[in-house]
Length: 286
Image (tube, rainbow, N blue to C red; front, side, top):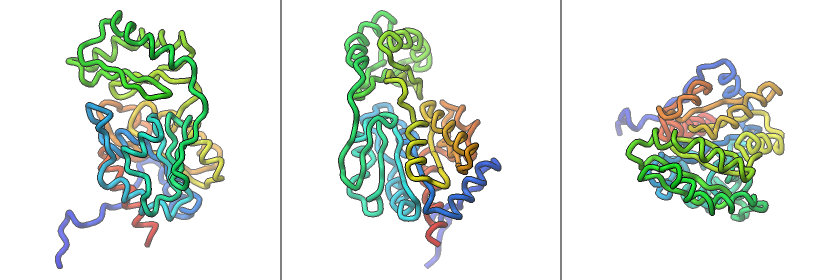
């Protein structure tokens, strides 16, 4: 039986930076001490106009399931509620992913595959106030038709992707939403044509660092695509300075070039992330 080029497994790409190569080497040398952490939207799941329709790339769950038995931990770190990410990702009840952890709301929520339960603290009181005031703030700001609100439980997001001029609509809302967030003790987190109002102190960098420290991990990989992933990038850089090698993987996007500029390795969107994770699992299984 002949093998076509499409059937050939993707190679394990070489990081462009020395720090990235050191991080990958550490993962390959002692995978049982490696933490593999990935964002969801834009990294495991393609960006879509309606976030409620986002689903993991078809190869994402099989790639993670193939990788998980070889490493200390596989974690999904997302701004979404943990339960939503689990449903949209199809992560529950997957053989090989019994140890998967989903850190939702930037780490404020945690879902463990082993128990199927979500653990979370109390909601910040500013969220309810922002939820009530936000429609009027958008109206006063002259929000463009197509701008809409996403209710995220512990956060509220305003999307402009459906507007006639998404970038202009986004720019027009930054100042009023910054003021609204500040009045209620919240932070404004910009993303790919989305502005999220959420409690301060919640970010992917803290969530990732806490996970690495809790496991006494010897190496870490983080994959992301958006501005909300920059704190996780910074966390990996701090961990490197503390002697924990790390690899920064970027799911490339023309909308957010900042991550590509800091990444050790850039791949073409969720399909590229899946190919890399699949290749890494293959090498570790050899």
